[in-house]
Image (cartoon, rainbow, N blue to C red; front, side, top):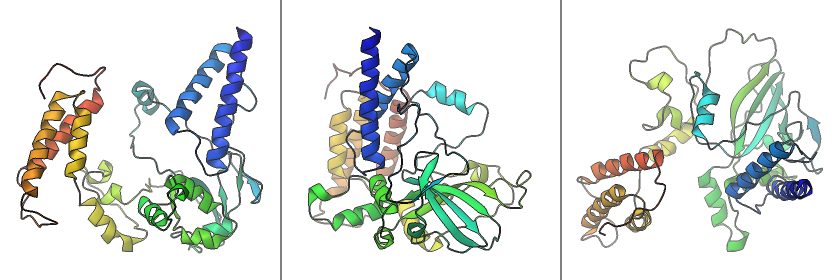
Length: 353
C-alpha cells in the first residue's frame, strides 16, 4: 500500500512538473488550470496523508527554474506565492478582520524593477521565486515603464507585466494560421518579456503595473500614508470602485496619479458601454434551463424585448430608448448573483418550458 502511494505521488509530481515546464518555460499549455489545480490538490492531500514529499514536488518548489538563455540573478528577498483556495471559509479565515479588496487577477509575468540615481538599473523576472532572469533590455521597451525618475536613491518595485486582451486580439488577428494563434495573453506575455531581441518585445505592447514598493533608500515608510496602485477601473468604473475613497459619507484629501492618462478616453468608453447579443442570450437561456427556473424566465423576458427592438432593423438602428430592457437586465443580474451565491446541487426538472 505504501509503495503504491509512493508511486502515485511520483507520477503526480512528474505530471505537474511537466505542465509547469510547458507553461513557464516553453509558453504552452498541456493541461487546463482546472486540471492542474485538481492534480495539485490531490498531490498535496497524499503528501499530508503519507508524509512523503519528493524534493522536486511542486508543493515545495514554487514556479519553474528559469531557462539558461538569459542571465540569472538571485533576488534580494524571496518572492513567495500565496496558496490557492476554493473554500470561502478558508478565505474568510485568511482575511480575518482586515479591510480587504478582492479583484480579478492580472495574469502576466511578475517583474522586479530597480532604480538607482534616477535611472532604471535592472529588471528581473520572478523565475522560481529565488532566482530570476535579467530582462532589463526588454523592460526598457515596455509601453509604460519610465527609464528615468526624479527619485535619486535606490528604489525597488515589484509588479506584473501584462498584455491586454485588446492587444492580444490584435496580434492574433495578424496570424492567418488558426493553429499558430496564441492561446492566451499570459503565455504571449511570458514569451514577449523573455525575448532575446527586444524589438519583438516592443511590438507586443507589454505594460507594467506595480503592486508593491519593496524598498526606497533613505526613506522611512513607517509613518507613510497608505497608497494604492491599481487599474483605471477601480477609480473610474461606476460598478467597480474603491469604497475607501468613493463610498457614501467618505471624506478626506487624496492625491491620484494617473499613468498613461491619454488612454482614459478609450477606457472610459469601455467602462460606460455595454453590449448584448440576442443569439448569445438565447443560448445562455437554453443552458440555464435545467438549473434555475427563475433565471430562465427572466432571460425569456430579455429575449422577447430584444426581439421587439430588432423588428424593422435590417443592419443597424439607433434607438432613442431601450424601453424596459435595462430593468430586465438588472433583474437578471440580481438573480444570477443569487444563483452564484447558492448554486443548485442538482438539475431542476418537472416544470413547463
